[in-house]
Figure 1: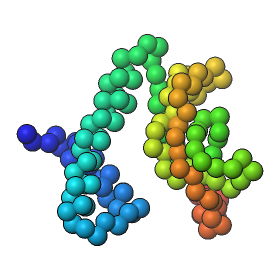
Figure 2: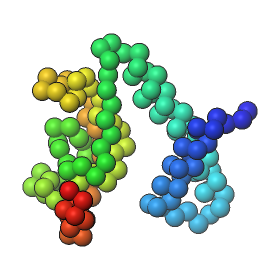
Figure 3: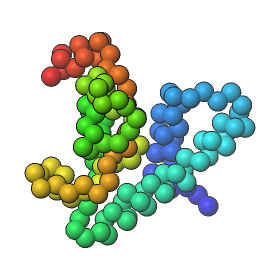
Length: 130
């Protein structure tokens, strides 16, 4: 059975991104791990597209990228006294709720994130782009 072009493209992108965080020396193991991406993409698509779009009231999803850590919207491993020094590195599950951008937002599931420390160089770059 031929893989859909979208699934193939996103799987390749996922594997490229993950290779920035991992190094697998055994070629057989690398092929085995890379082959898991299409099934993972299909499962995520089923969950975040089809199942969410059939819910009433309409649910919204939000992935965070390089945002400051907000424990009211995110779940992860960090110390509360260091929260001002952390940003989202990887958001591996989205914030799910209704009316997310309003004052009467209702949150059903917090985003799940891996934080990273803010480096002095990234703060300087952000100030240039603001």
